[in-house]
Image (cartoon, rainbow, N blue to C red; front, side):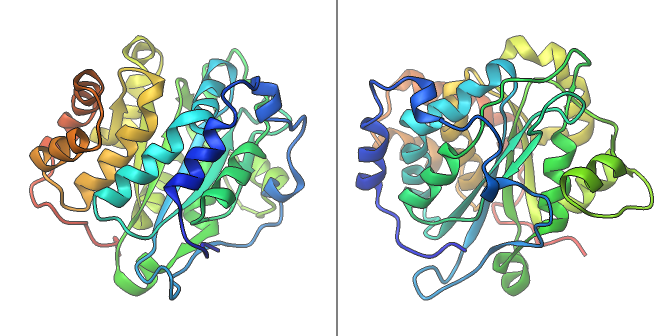
Length: 305
């Protein structure tokens, strides 16, 4: 997937048309959309084409339990066009975006929903708004983030890795802990793979990291105490704390730009040139500056063997 051209103006028109709609009018699903059911899916592909010769795969795995449903709502109403514009302005010419949605397999009816890699505003928006914001989760302090990582690691493929030995990007939002293992039972029931044993979390993170730069985005400082320790252990400096959930797209785009070789000074200048106010720029810089400090050489790392 990933064919067609992106139009920022078209994307802006799509989101602005929803300004007076309720969340239930934007997200109308009351169960998992049949095309987003991961059961039996072989591979989701991000491929080069004549229109997109240097495709860059980007996965958004969005927690849709409880209050976390505000992030897909923000993306659909306002923020996703800004994400794409920031990427394009930063020289990432051929982004292809896939949406996943995460719940809790212990409690929810739709703990994993998976779209396709897309390049056009209309196609991205379709998968985003086809999601079921179930709003579930349980009281066990964990969500099924591991299933999204498992699917991305073992059920996606992209030409950035196959042709150019480059990694894509995996952004997961959340405010709970991961399960310590990928359950073979849940994988069988929800994805259809027959595993002989559970997969340790650190193993699936390592597999995911071979083809993607994985980031875990915590919406605000107030939720760090709930899950920060576990994600620091799992993702290290790729655990990013936002100043607010409305910064999800801008921070994600900034992280891509930094990994693609842009310096913090260049990034700040680019954000200023885009017309963002100083306060918003400061919020983005605060979120990413710790990660930026870990980058010694401003180029993409190769795929791990």
